[in-house]
Image 1 (cartoon, rainbow, N blue to C red):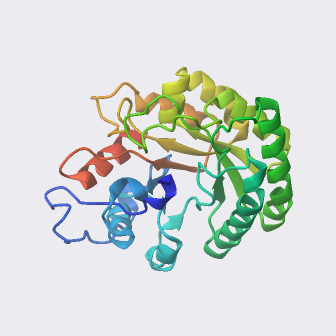
Image 2 (spheres, rainbow, N blue to C red; image 1 turned 90 degrees about the vertical axis):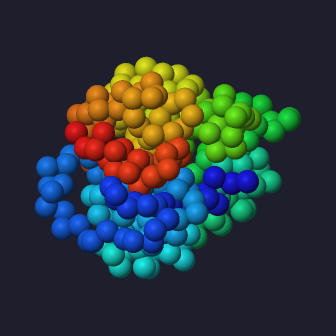
Image 3 (cartoon, rainbow, N blue to C red; image 1 turned 45 degrees about the vertical axis):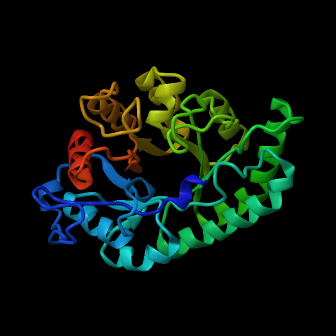
Length: 291
């Protein structure tokens, strides 16, 4: 089961049921003119809502972009005026850590780079892959860099970023809340991999939820690694739920710390709604991060 295979999202405005099918009117954007954070939403979290319905709700709320939806939905979503903030690729399990995966990883990254160019997306996601018996940390490092080096020139040529996501390996309660066995579970290791690539088009995807679980010290890590960060994800912890006061991350100062570094890319909401009104949860998350 792959993370990027979950590609739909539910959305509802206040007073409207998430399953009613009633969609909000288009947002003019005027009420959000002072927002500093460029927010996006991750589609898989809101399954089974269709991408177009989610996109309409997201636009009404004030989000600028969407990701984690099927590429087949890109035309109709972008026609609404939303951007594609991140393009999926090879998935977290089949990564370049294992040389047997290199041909597939390279092909999928190149395909995703072309897709990003077509729809104006700034970044394509990549992962290290899962630990494998017989592959040491040193070998895994060499294997990852060797594979990415075969693609990064193409990304530079097309002016598309590759962003490496750090994932937590601790939470085994749900296949999408944690990823036991994922080799890139140390944000410092992932940062070293990014630096080893030595390319302005290869950066870190800093997932606040995953970093909180594995390391904590969020603001200090944001300040430390901001020069190499190309994308951010959010979610509440524990549980990967809403960004409300039932979880431990104090998001307003975290978002301010991100923006104070000068970051002007996307911050994507990647929480799994737990309420009966998932769109209201998205609206609340938008407000929490609208600092």
